[in-house]
Every structure is written in structure tokens, then in C-alpha cells.
Length: 310
Image (cartoon, rainbow, N blue to C red; front, top):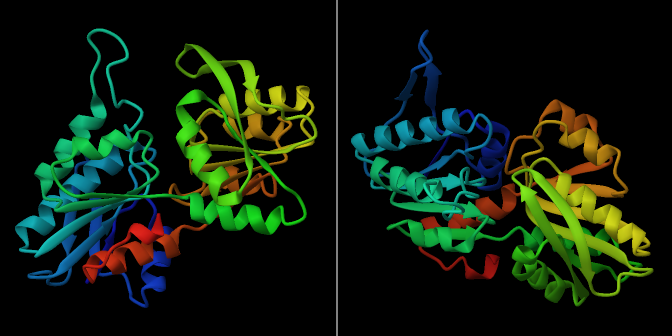
């Protein structure tokens, strides 16, 4: 097994390697003066089981191109098997045609990754589960729920929280967490007028005097979460916390979270936190998924089932 990292989230890659009691293998990913990406592997990988850790987060196109060139490099260097470890899969929200004459970019990215040389993909909490079917290679979609569940049990050990889905599309994810916590479930009926703007309409379930846990896969502008938190507090909730797998937090999202009634926002380090996000502590907390991905990589390498990690 050899583990390599692009430039997207090297601290996470180092933490995963540490969990596996290994060092990151040597690879140079740099840019020429015109910003063309150049990759050079500084050790042999012939016949090796290779893992490339590279979330396709902001800047998405740069990090995606890095991943594709790395995949091609390892394929041409005779690696036996190449696994693309993509904790955050960019373009996942473009998983269907939402209007005439629009793309399905998630499918395009899946094809690019496979054609570049990936033999399998390891990711976490895809925005839509059907994206696994966009690939013609095996895809393991880990769940952040076990990591969240342990944190919720520790911080809410004296309370019985209620899990809330911020929209109808996230009900399956929220129900799975509620089942793990043996908690009640509520749903927010959200109407979106245009991209990036949401409006809370109705709350399905009685949240009065409840400690609510909002669960979602991606927090981008944070508008949905903040509006949901306001609606829950207005409906009589005692407190509202949010757990999201991927903290994109673009634009004024951090300021929006700070000014919201959210008690806290918990994200994972699938995307490397910015200085602004880290400065927002303790309102925004970051949980590590290094152990989860390290165990997933180990089981793939040893040809063991990873279903128990779900």
C-alpha cells in the first residue's frame, strides 16, 4: 500500500497515513508559470496498491484537474490498483437536469475519473446516493453518521435530542441518524425560489421544548441551516445544533452562522477548514474523519468488507 496526497487537503492525508502507521509517499504536484499542473512521482509504484487522497473542494476545477493528472501519472507508472479517495466529491449537486438544456456534471466528472485511471473510488456522504451508479467502477460511499453519533451522544448525554431534516430530500439521512440515536424525527418543508436562496415554509413534527439536531450533507451558503434554526426556535425549540458532513462555507456563510440562533455547527475535515472557519470556534467545530477513511483504506487493501463502517 502506498498513500499519496494532492494539494487539496494534505493535513487530512497526513492524519489518515498516521492512523495507518505509515508516511505519505513522495509525490510532487506543482504548477508551471502559466498554471499548468505538473505531477512527478518520486518513488516506484510498479505493482503497488495506490491511494490518492484528494477532495475536490475550492478551487474545485484546480483540485479536480490535479486528481485527474495524478491518476493518469500512476496509471502510466504501472500501479497495480489505483483508488481515488475523495472525501468531498465536487459537482455532486449537479446530479440531474433541473431545467432544459442543462448538464449532469456529476456524471461527467465520474467518467473523467474512471477514464483517467481510477480502479475504484472511496468517498463520503455523496449528495445523492445514485451518483454511485454514474461510475462504471466500484464506489464505496462512507457515512459520517457514526462520527456524528458519537459526538452527539457525548455532548447530549443528559438530554434526548430530536433529529431534524432541513428539507425533504435529506429525510433518509436524518432518519438513519435518528435510528442510531433512538430519537424522534422532524422535517422542514423548504421552498427554494432560486439557487442559493431558501425559504422555510412548514415544520412537520412537534419541536416544542426539544433540543434539535439539524443534519445535512453540505453547508455552503448556510442560508438553509440558518433559516431552519430560526424556524425551529420560533416553534419553541429549546436549542438547535447542526451537523454537516462537508463544510463548504462559501461567501458570508461563517458570518451568517455566527449571527444565527444555532448553538453550534459541527462539520468534518473532508474539506480543509479555512482560517475564517477556525476563527469561528467554538460556534463552529471540526471533527476528524481520518480514522474512518484510514479504516476504509485498510479494509480495501486487505480485501475485507467495509459495510460495518456504514
